[in-house]
Amino acid sequence: AQTVTQSQPEMSVQEAETVTLSCTYDTSESDYYLFWYKQPPSRQMILVIRQEAYKQQNATENRFSVNFQKAAKSFSLKISDSQLGDAAMYFCAYMGQGGSEKLVFGKGTKLTVNP
Amino acid sequence: NAGVTQTPKFQVLKTGQSMTLQCAQDMNHEYMSWYRQDPGMGLRLIHYSVGAGITDQGEVPNGYNVSRSTTEDFPLRLLSAAPSQTSVYFCASSYGFNSNQPQHFGDGTRLSIL
Image (cartoon, rainbow over all chains, first blue to last red; front, top):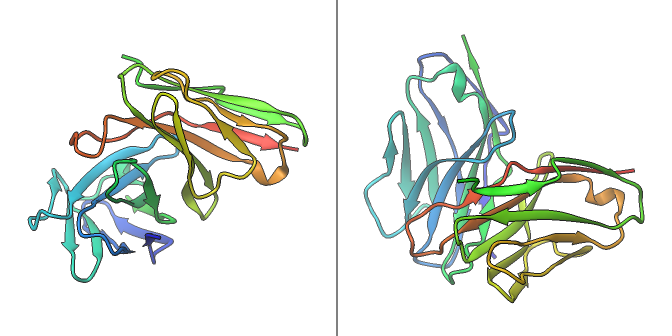
């Protein structure tokens, strides 16, 4: 079974600075998707960024980018120019082949942004 | 466009009571799933469905029952509530693995079992 590990339960960053959240995963599949979800106190699950395993290029979405290292099974999220609104729980998630759309989540990292 | 609608948003039950959490989507998504979120555990898959009439178990299915009679609805039933089922429950839906479209999540149901 696939597993997703987020080794940082909590992180903090100063406003306008850069922070990197770590995620590693374990799988024997060659084709899969990886995601970062943001969950603010409102409890909504908001998709931040997604990465297809077959693509070597790292995904970027405005201030959010990933460092995808397939061989190392590592998928970190970098947030640049951090804003107060970035404060939230961040979950790394894996979706494998098979078409069932099942997501496997890490335990999350709580990000605090200090003014 | 309502997206994924979960009802109720909050519920308190007594041990042994039964209840159905409702989930409806208006996007004609084939795939629907239920997750539970416990403190420090992330989200874990309870049950999922790849289309009307087809359901399967996820990681933590015990104590829960599902059915999928229509594309739009995917209710989650607690047959005899236990305190261990106190959690936040999320329903999600999507078109499919190769659709290049993300999953849509509902706003969650906070359930407390006394």
